Amino acid sequence: MVQVKAKDTLPMRQFSKSYEMYDYNLLFIRWLADFCGVDMMVEHYRFNYRTALCILALSLSVILSLYTFILYYPDIYKISEVLVLTGFILQGSVKFYYGYSHRKFYQVQYGRLRNLHYKYRNHEKINASLLTLMERIHMLSKLIWVVFLLGAMGYTIYPLYMHFANGERVLMIAMRIPGIDTDLLSGYVATSVMQMAMLIVACTGISAADTVILLFVANLIAYVDVFTNELDELNAMLNAEVRDEAKIRQQVRVICSQHQDIIEYESDLDERYIMICFAHVIGSIVAMSTALFLVYMIQFVPGYPILLAVFCQLLEFCLLGTVLTVKNEEIIRAIYSAQWYLLREPERRSFALMLHKSQNFIEMTIGGFAPLNLETFVAVG
View 1 (cartoon, rainbow, N blue to C red):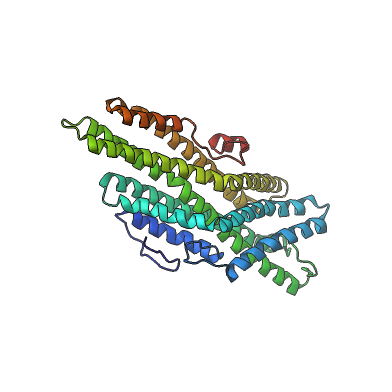
View 2: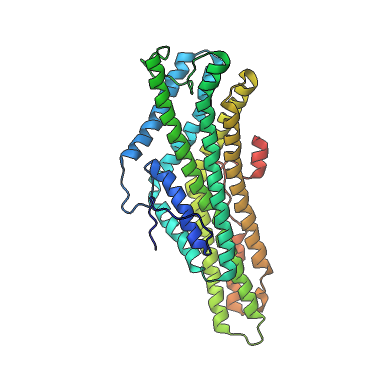
């Protein structure tokens, strides 16, 4: 497998092979992950100072949030401002924990996906399909980062807005540091610098986690496209004037092996992301509802970009869950549509077993309590 270094750069050009676009997309994702010290593609990855700083930022966020809750009680608006951030802290903590603890899994999956794209580099139809998929994933990855950047910018312009509009000195985030008086200029600057650093880490870290999830789940489309293409090729073999039974048997084995790979891939996604999806949805609901409350009650300026960021973030996950369901249904239809009745008895039994396994497909869920799909998005929204 070709190693792609996080600090490598590729010129922005039109790629002709999907594996090239995969590598290019991976560079952006790895840049985000490397910033937070969790670039799992580094050979012999080890805990480093950026990892420690990321953990420190998460720990401080939890501690300072609790302190601020106590400090501002019973000011419901200040408490709500901190509660918005609590939703993101919950998401970030769970995503960081599972990303770090499952780093070996991610290393294997990165290579596995690249091998899939590389294998079909010379297959015109499949390569074109996979290339289009990777281009869309790349655009969505950049969009996710931009949305979170806008959310962070909403906090950074808030003090400027309040200064020029109302002549008030306010913090970017209603999160205080024990022992530092923000009424003093030195205390205000120190607190603002710390908050800016935390915003940068949060924006980059959550963007990295969400783009990785996008890459893994969306690439199920690649597996299904390859699988359905192999079924089409099998149908062509079965309808040929002169049938080559040896090639037909080999093709059936390839199809069954690919179907098993899809099942294992979906199982891995469900196992790794079930708690991440739970924390993601709960955190999004907390952030969205409190931001909406603040916008309605006090015209809280950062609330507008935060609502946009949370809306897009929740929509992303629900769309990915829907993609998983749609592609599983596509697999069933493809197997039903195959001309399996033209196969010999041993191969027909293989198809029957494959169809049986397809009936109980895996869905992304919110901690196992509810399906993660567009219906859930509409219900939550």
